[in-house]
Image (tube, rainbow, N blue to C red):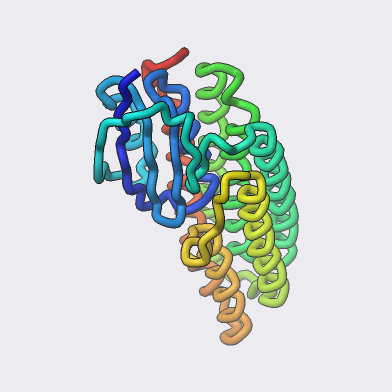
Length: 281
């Protein structure tokens, strides 16, 4: 079968959770034969039959800043190739175990960060905990929902997305309340320690994902330090240092607002997975 390869640059595909989101959107489409990812370069290869309209539309729906940069005809079955970007040498069983482990890490640290966010009185930590929950939701969809069929997958994605929008919306309302009403200054020490733990948890997640790949894939430092999760964790730590230095709650409220907005944007991408695309199978 003659295939076409579409090469995309996906500007906001900067972590393994977003890779899973792209997989959830594209793999159910019958004409998609294979996907290859290079997160360091924000690069996606789509091996497909057909005219490419369905995968292009599904990718654009995620609002990850995709742009088609090249296209060529494939001269061989892609399953015969191995790739540094996550190719056919990857063990499905290993990958599934890794996804379950990463789901557990993200869900567990969501609970930890939520509790300490409340204890510290920090909106930054609470917002960061929701960011961990958002990643956990994507990994959960990847592990449990794909095999359940298109309708069930869409329902789970819809419920997850709306839950995140609701929680983040409530978080933004609480930020507004704290702006207009006097509240205690967050505990900067707890913020620093817990946010540093979140940074370690995200690093562990990356390591778990890439250890599961037996095809030579490796993490790139330039990608790790610019990935969205790491930037969020670093922002909370910086806000905590500013709270300690100034004795003001404003840095915490600012970073909390920014992260809640990040969570809402991610939730809208998950909601995009809940929309029918006419490609059920």
